[in-house]
Amino acid sequence: MPMNPDLEKERQGGTFDVEQLTHILDGGRDKTLKRHFLEQEVLKDPVFRGPDTRFLSREELFGELLRKHVAVIKKTQELSIDDINEASTIYSAAMNNNVGPLTLHSVAFVAPLDLMADDEQKKKWLIPAKKYEIIGCYAQTELGHGSFIRGLETRADYDVNTQQFVLNTPTETAIKWWVGGCVAVGDIGPKFGFGGVDNGYLCLNNVRIPRDNLLAKTGKVLEDGTYVKPENPKVVYGSMLGIRAALPKVGAYNLSKAVTIAIRYSCVRHQSEIKPGCGEPQVLDYQTQQHKLFPLLATAYAFHTVGVWMLDFHSTVMNEINEGHYHRLAEDHVLAAGLKAVINWKTHEGIEICRFSCGGHGYSLASSLPVIYVNHVANSTAEGETVILLLQTAVYLMKCVIDLEQGTPLDPSVAYLDQSFSKSEQWCSDVDMHSLLKAIQFRSKKFTEYVSSFVKKELMATGNQQLAFNKHKVILVECAKAHTEAVIMNAFVTKVDEILQSNPSVGKVLSLLCQIYGVTEILAHSGDYIQYEYLRKIDLDNIQDQLFKLYTYIRPEAVLLVDAFDFHDEVLKSILGRYDGQVYENMFKWAKASPFNKQDQGTFRKYIQQLKQAKL
Ligand SMILES: CCCCC/C=C\C/C=C\C/C=C\CCCCC(=O)SCCNC(=O)CCNC(=O)[C@H](O)C(C)(C)COP(=O)(O)OP(=O)(O)OC[C@H]1O[C@@H](n2cnc3c(N)ncnc32)[C@H](O)[C@@H]1OP(=O)(O)O
Ligand SMILES: Cc1cc2nc3c(=O)[nH]c(=O)nc-3n(C[C@H](O)[C@H](O)[C@H](O)COP(=O)(O)OP(=O)(O)OC[C@H]3O[C@@H](n4cnc5c(N)ncnc54)[C@H](O)[C@@H]3O)c2cc1C
Image 1 (tube, rainbow, N blue to C red):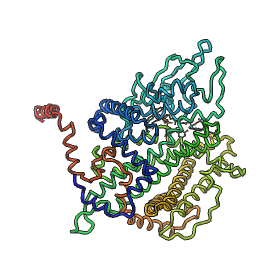
Image 2 (cartoon, rainbow, N blue to C red; image 1 turned 180 degrees about the horizontal axis):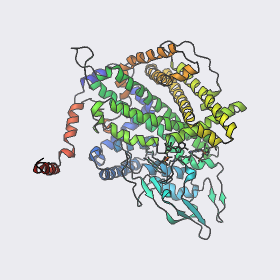
Image 3 (spheres, rainbow, N blue to C red; image 1 turned 60 degrees about the vertical axis):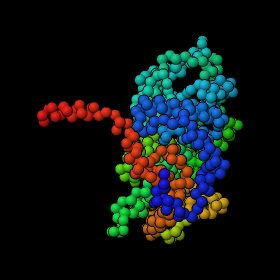
Image 4 (cartoon, rainbow, N blue to C red; image 1 turned 180 degrees about the vertical axis):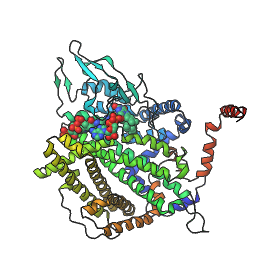
């Protein structure tokens, strides 16, 4: 199919090599080549062909995705893939923006076995689980409790005579609920999205399991019922850490899809007039459309950068824990908590902005933006609700303030809290990314000190930490967000500095995106910078001008920057986001193919006839 002339023209501009940026995003040219190979292994294999999942009912969707997910597993085994990124490539190429039915087995059942099973148990369960010879799920949440784990009601009473645990969900609120990939007991019914996953309920009534079913690498129960505590009790929470540490990159992936669709479509879509008689401009030439999409484009790159960094950090900490060193578990937990919370929340807001920026066609499943949205938005609740996780990060920051007062060294990701920040020089309209990072770190430091003073005062008055925290939860959450933004900006600046050395032209365009991310973040909290007397009104006016100037620099690069995400059309599955930009013809073809246009509208005639016969 010929290339849409608008997109053809867009691709003649630009100042950097798209392929080199794709290689950087993938982690090197070899990884890009391997990703292309794996995608083709899926896309050329007829077993992965099937009905357009956007036209399917919930039951049909579950069946079709289960069929495909089994094919994904076979393909992954056939190609001897064990790298998580490569496995994700095969999975994403097949799932058409859905979450597969066996996802929870891989991310929430295998991970805890890996982390908490002893060698014997690994042989018995982890090895067959990795081969899908046993399929598992993660049944923690109950009808009455999800966030408050210590409030869970399920019982496991030890029967010393039979060396068994007797499992019971003693009340209705104790029924296990939301259990992804939970089979044979019951599905909790239709949901907002996640149609490919059978989130189930599980009632336990005197279910007996052997003593050695308790994962024993950390804590264990001896034959006489004595409980041997794990060296570090918090490691039992570790199974939730793995998914949280992975979800920032999942957020980046989903936001990258949404901005790819919205920016390509905004170059194909012509609407209204700027200069009368000069034809309808591309909607991406409107400053308001750029103001919607360019900060999100910058955010997608920022989230990808920090998502890769978080996964590396987490895997290092897990290796340390496997060797018995727990000193970085707390930092890993609060980083994963803050990044998972902020990134997934801003991602679902961003996907919605992308959908709105495509007008009516964004509301059609032909765009796939609604599919990407309803499947992504769960990530702000699942694996730790947003506020719950931000409070974890906030409590850690309050401890950092005490550590600072006591001269205890801080973890590297919060070291900036110990830095002194002088009030900024007057800003013009070309503030560099390092100055923007300093400002964002300054705000986080000041906010942490401000919140800590309130919590301390409350603690003095009540002597109760939970009460003190509960009275200031709103500002504690904001404090955690401010810190997390400092972590994101620091990772982005660090990566861009590195790329400026290795590939100056790519680095330059990414530094523009980094500035857009930083300026947008500062303008979103401009009042704080005035209140803390770090910036003046003139500074804020200047960076507002800078933002609009940055948009003009990014405009000619925008399509190339989304091309660099390198989504194959069959992976993106969006008519608005097609690489060739042939939207209208394919929208019409897709609509005509809808089963709704095929089925006999007998119902229509039957009921309309009734109206006519009713002699209204
Ligand atoms: C093959 C390719 C596949 C690709 C896949 C792609 C995408 C993936 C798609 C889908 C997957 C996404 C979602 C679906 C899966 C969802 C599964 C679930 O939802 S499972 C259930 C998740 N539930 C939760 O997250 C519950 C949240 N609540 C809690 O974690 C706890 O209740 C709490 C909020 C942390 C409170 O704990 P507690 O009541 O014990 O009190 P605290 O004093 O706050 O904590 C005690 C202590 O422990 C530390 N800590 C807490 N959590 C952790 C942790 N995870 N790790 C390490 N440490 C932890 C905490 O800091 C305290 O320490 P201290 O202050 O020093 O005492
Ligand atoms: C798509 C999806 C898949 C899931 N898969 C699984 C799975 O496979 N296995 C599993 O075990 N679970 C699963 N879950 C459940 C999920 O982990 C819980 O929904 C999540 O932990 C939130 O808990 P909750 O639903 O009890 O919300 P609640 O904690 O009841 O939250 C309700 C509101 O109360 C607020 N709140 C609660 N506690 C506090 C507090 N201390 N301070 C301030 N505010 C508070 C929250 O911020 C929120 O606004 C899944 C959920 C979804 C949506």
